[in-house]
Length: 508
Image 1 (cartoon, rainbow, N blue to C red):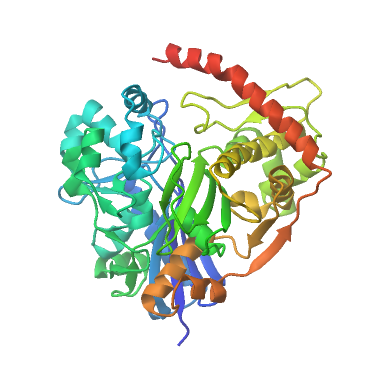
Image 2: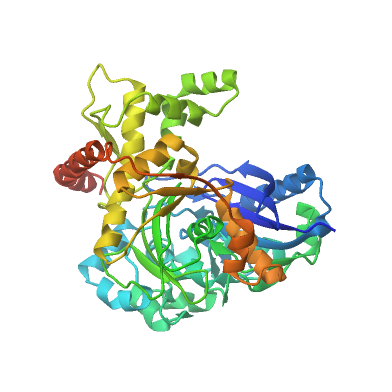
């Protein structure tokens, strides 16, 4: 009998189910889109009542199209976007819509904590920065603004944990995913009442889910879930994976010193270390999914989602052209960007449509536009601006002591050779891209493979299930043009500080 692994990946808007053979090959992928809701400025939500049915539909379609016997799926791993929050009530039912990680409703909570100089006290537990989309801030926001919701909280989950609960009926999380929430004592891999007291939310202690290793068996597919998905009841489901770490695993990053960049919904820039790189200037240091290792991360909601918004808002003509040619609209965008050389546009783009690594109130913008600029100029500016956002994070990791020699690039941006080359040239690092497109799901699937006993550990899984598709070297001749534009990008950031502060006050 053939054997397969299933990775279930829930990002901010898309639910995916990907089936892999034990060599890591993608056998079938199916997906469903669950649009985000924006009920108020700065709010970003996802309907939990449709999240599970859509995910179940994707699983059933993947099994059907793969034409395999559900008995042949020997393990299931879940992954999904980190942070945000997905709440169950005390009867273990969805309490309200889920909140995505780009949500900024709790920005004022962060301001209050900063005024109290709370970060140094919390940092010894969390090893990470404050930001509005984390559960600690969101829970404090609920306690202050929606106390009735806060009083009814039964379980605090991440998105992949909610899907895992729907599959198994069991509530749990994994150390790495919850280690990124600022609700855990990361150095000790345990919950802390003292930490929750600092944030003013001690009441949620009993609502925090039991943590597991990502490859530990968390439960088994229930008969109800089997009926909804087409899976075999009793199939083991493991603890699951924080999506940014799942992408790194799926790209083959399992050793200290390896670097992964995710150019997706978020700008994720992470390096695996043997010891924690505890620096209060960094976004996050966390336990890595591979036991005994750590990951230092710089991140913000400033990456390829900006391109998705641009395409949906301004590229109707390109979408029609892509349909006529039988290709993706993003391939058309790549061609437009490649039509201009490095330094071929003098427009600067700040990629802050969904958040910022500069300040909570920063907003996106194209700067320096003139009548002669075309859509190609704007697209190249957008591609470059997103890379500059990543570069600012890489510089902070380097300043904290991280040594980098090569990067595994993942996320939607890695599918574009022209974009990959911009990354290589601007960061002055070789970019390696692993085979496959569903790397986060693969990371979850190989975790399930360890739990099912088909891989010895993560090193064994990567050796058997991850292959490189290409490697792109930096072009030294192109680098000066990008670094000059990066300097202009930063000068504009400094100039925009006061206007952003003014706009923030107007919105209060």
